Length: 126
Image (cartoon, rainbow, N blue to C red; front, side, top):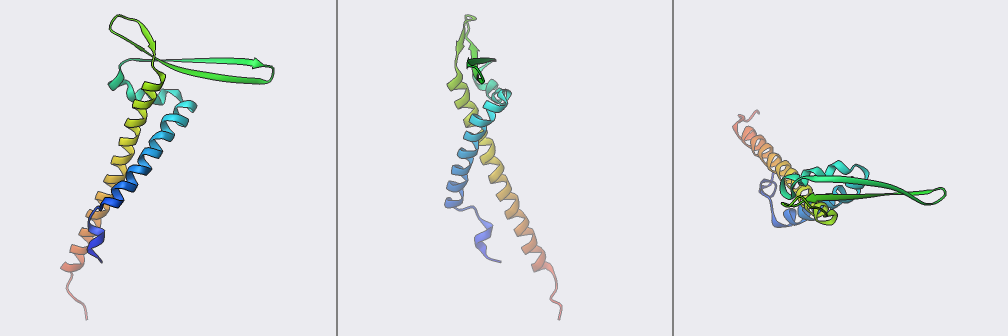
């Protein structure tokens, strides 16, 4: 068992950041397009979010859906802040995924250390 498995190096963190950003982008774009209440994770940061879905058909046999997110300011005026809300949700999902990867690695290191300590504590059997 090498000592290399017992630490988190910089390249691991960089790769995990890249993967977390990609996964956060997928959840914030495709995930919200499929299931729009996924954007509610951004509510503590941006405020109360109202989701508006509009179905439209511009040609027989074709249809589309437009999803918009509205925020209410202090004066009670609603403002379309779809990009801002989606961006905040993207950041939050990226951080959550990053923390999941880092905690997985942390517990993996703890398990390796426990196994190493357990093997060291065993008497040699000949």
